[in-house]
Image 1 (cartoon, rainbow, N blue to C red):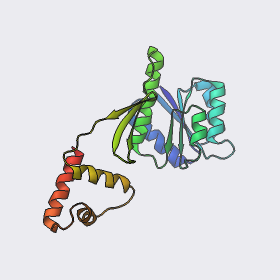
Image 2: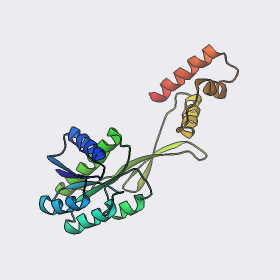
Image 3: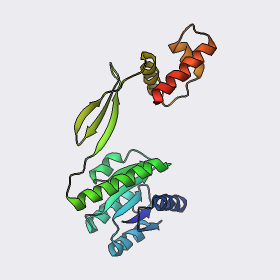
Image 4: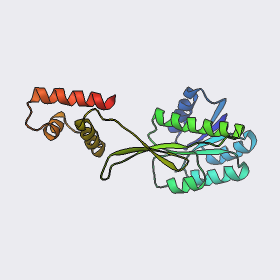
Length: 209
């Protein structure tokens, strides 16, 4: 598979090219800081996928994607941007993914995996099964997966009720630092520090398992 990387910031462009090279999945990767140059090159090279920054001068990533798809409808698009307000427009163009900067390697690898699964599905004629996982936390705590729009609940067996309560609390506070002392006071009130710490570590171990 051949890829184009287009980003007007040279450092970001080179970094993404390097990360894609490290996956070992691509036969060739060409990078461009000028979107007009990338468009001209695409007409000759016919890349399989283009990783496009959105905020670029003169010709932005959305406009470039539209031009690339007009020239070659089979090309896949992956957007890379520091902003999330373009997501709806991106998926109107059937972009295979939308990656937010700063980009983490596991997230990029997931996008590449999705890209290759779609290609394999097109080659074999088998339908692509898209799987997403989620958590419901209104009224009760439930885990589920969505496969091609079909929702299936995933049973989870908790070792203790405290493990379930701790997980739910950490989920609620997932963007904030929570101290060990706060958790002990919340879930094991009145317990001394040594015993509370032991209980907390044991419960965290149960959740990880």
